[in-house]
Length: 332
Image (cartoon, rainbow, N blue to C red; front, side, top):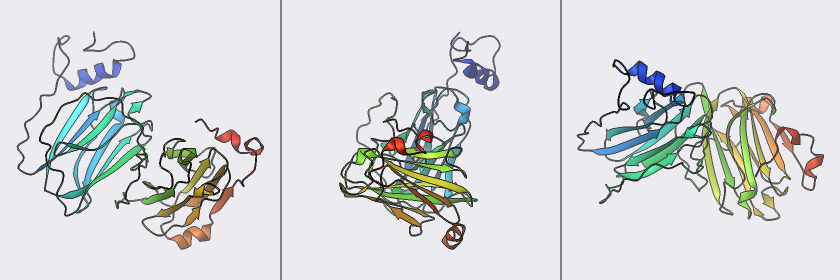
């Protein structure tokens, strides 16, 4: 039946139910988790996770950026397509770093179920998403400032499939809307990669990809933004993600109209940097694409000594004359 599961669709739920429940025979109703009343005289952060059909791949952590301390985390989600709610008491005011990961690299929406997440701060939604790759990162609040006051009236609404958010998976605050630069710390062995991109007059023509690997064709995609994500012209967007230190990476940016970000239709540009330093490369005047291959050395002197490789397609080159086209067909 639907409680125990059958076929391929609910098999994982059935196994999780058998592992985490104590019963004899088939249950008459699906297991429920009774809500625990939260007695909190301070502020409340509520994290709502709706899993996809592979719940064991999902984990999240919440960190207080003001004190660089972990507030809460969870990596145990036994049931697929199930809503999990975590409520946390926190001191008034503070900046928080939320990181959700998917171990398979396909996020929690929408290829294998309609998973999503939503973060409420004193009843007000401050971050949401679900469609990402390996991870999604959201930063909210500010150190030393009061959080949002509880809303005078709260209306519960059903969860719906999230619209595309990052997504930077990283991250990072890849919401397709202008974001403020926020500082966060990466785990040991990783460095902070940041992209600052100013769109031209046709923002929907821009897309980019960040990969890890020595060759573009065989590299692992870490995060990406597709054509149509950016919608505001002459607007600066900031994306931030943690990447493995001392590894080879590729950053590639594309323009659908083959005229780059600058300078025929506005003065767009982009720059990439590590660990909050100044940019180690800036560009914008290219044709259909520009690629930057670099080693993620925190010390720029080491990075430049090893070499930064730039591959730029000049303006006016017909896309079908580009020999690297076969490894990335534009789709949208």
